[in-house]
Length: 151
Image 1 (cartoon, helix red, strand yellow):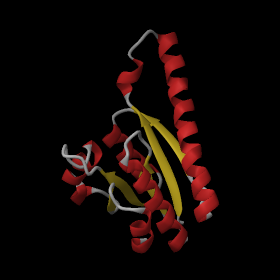
Image 2 (cartoon, one colour; image 1 turned 60 degrees about the horizontal axis):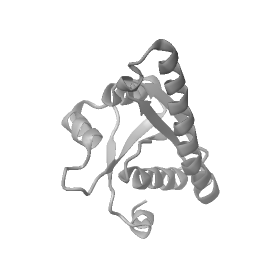
Image 3 (tube, one colour; image 1 turned 30 degrees about the vertical axis):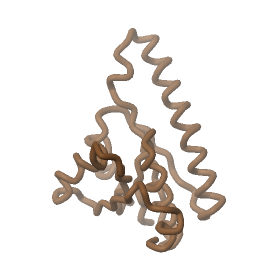
Image 4 (tube, one colour; image 1 turned 90 degrees about the horizontal axis):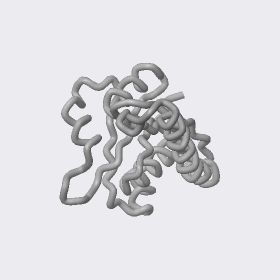
């Protein structure tokens, strides 16, 4: 089954990327894999404190994931898979794509803010020609109705 890989973070545009991935998966018989990445600089503390912070980060991610997962199950009949990785985001995204051969499309949300589309979209766009899967960039300003029409 082809999976749509979507990145879970704290950005506003993440919401539209999640919706798009779930709707496309539902309409094409695919699945959704939600990837959240814990940056390495969050745990530059003493070993014991770093471990506690790492577990707290994982708990926050799981709680955030459950909100999206419930919507996907209830509205799109999609049961998403959660993957949590640690490290720099772009290398971790590429590693996940390489390690899971079922990932067929990377879905990213683009910010409509004046600062540009966001760091992931910017960085991954630069290397898009060398990626092993297509990238779908979902504008953060699309409405639910617009998303439904294009999926």
